[in-house]
Length: 394
Image (cartoon, rainbow, N blue to C red):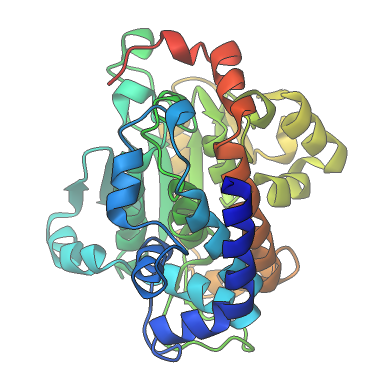
């Protein structure tokens, strides 16, 4: 019965997506983020997407026990993104600064620092630093990190005194990594198994935080046939310890990666049972098609230094030398001025990943990630590879 209802919803959405999206955006004059859109659809077309009450009710259960009402949200987003104009408008809306970011901008400009709990953002001269701060989960990402990380990215991009950005982990207070810096342990698999990770986490993260790192901030004018027109800055990643899953995905949108000797990165998608963000679209550009397949389909880990990791990493430094390497990299970029950096980023990106290509990928991603998220195979993977059934509930 669930599949019959899903087929009916998809048939209606496919035929009506332009009409629905036009109505909700007031003829493409009102910006609407993905996480807002799905609930407004629920009000306009009851049954096409779940209501907030229905999602909240289902969120009380472990993933294996859920009704899976959220899959209608990712299905609808897939139809929006498959429609060229609607999809590009949604991407454009997701690239605009968050209202919370605009509210915090003056405070950040005055103080030069903002603590957002699971993330911190600081201005150090011309450098804007986003510091991962989810200590308990070794800087894993989940619903609690979504908003802080995107606000931090907005602030770095909006502050006119900042010329480039940095992603780095704060020193850990985790018993196993006390005092060490960790870049990212990827997705919070414990929350995923326990049903605390929303399905909307995936498109919100990749259309918001990650895409802002890659493309910058969009203005108010929407021009689907014009060249990209965004406010963007170059980004450095300081890879210390490891960049697993989502952490590795972040490396793929960086302009310069400095890695500590002995660190590693991977995309363990098969073990997790999900699609690793936009990794399948981007990973092969760095490591090559065969190595990307090896990493995504067969769990290969890339150790630093090695010939294959060297295709992703710009610079390798011994332990304890990261601060100096960052300082030199920043001086090299900002010393000559960054006036053309945004233009060159756009020009490079045009030959790598057009907006249309990204839109089409995200349409597929939304549909297939929904299937993966609620698959019994994912539960089995988490229990077998992550021992998720033995972990304490938060």
